[in-house]
Length: 353
Ligand code: NAI
Ligand code: MG
Image (tube, rainbow, N blue to C red; front, side, top):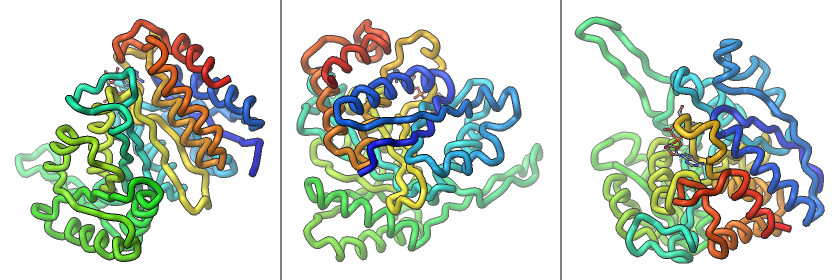
């Protein structure tokens, strides 16, 4: 197992620039304890760069990332730059160019962080959203016609391929096999009559290869309600690009806030680097005040450790998260506390060393 990793760092905008140093501090501390060394190449790719140079990243951006072991991204987004520019100018090209077709978003209710959902207890609510990350509803196929006229129109095609859907389903079923053995597929095949019945068929086909894993499918609307009413019943939820995106923010809210939620964009075949980023965005409303919750970014760093093969180091970080929340009252303001990003990180580091 490699013990020296080259990480491409893209702090991005807003609180992305505040939570990324926290994640690196934790990586360095856990690395010191477990004999792992990290070198960081930092890139200023962001909306700030877009405002200055007209592009989120340079034209050869992917080539500059290609030889790193992993990519860690804070968040991008700026109220003065349309969100589709920050997304399609940076995140989506990386996800697609590096075939990061699994977006993995685990969620847990921690002791010491009350869930807004009644009955959502620590240790019981522990599930993972597996989001298809490179096709589906997020497609470039479509267009606009008759701009500015009364008959103006927009059409956008969703793209579901057998290969693309099957590989993410395989990932979800295999993951469930290593957890509690239950897959829930998000669908809407009653209303969307071509793509989602196809999705359902591929779920049933994939399930045949995983006889030890139980599965069910739920329409997305009913599933949202059930995640709020009975969050403990889920193990692995798999959904298309759009459904998975929405479900993971809902799941983060069940756990107590978006600042807690981690995400990994994985290329399971490891032909390319995978990218690790907290679920939250650049949070312009609190950026620059040093009060962002770094928990999501730190948990994201643990996912990166696990991907790099350092399972023990990853569980050291996750254990420290559990302990700082259960054993101290130190919280950032989004969780009702008064600690700064730095104070929370410092407290957590005590449990890492
Ligand atoms: P957001 O996640 O940035 O913020 C939503 C709310 O949650 C805000 O009130 C914010 O203060 C709070 N929040 C988020 N993360 C927090 C943290 N770590 N600690 C404490 N509070 C936190 O989502 P929003 O407002 O929809 O988007 C803001 C910008 O971020 C937009 O430009 C959007 O496009 C971008 N964005 C970028 C993402 C990425 O880089 N992967 C993901 C989501 C949004
Ligand atoms: Mg989202």
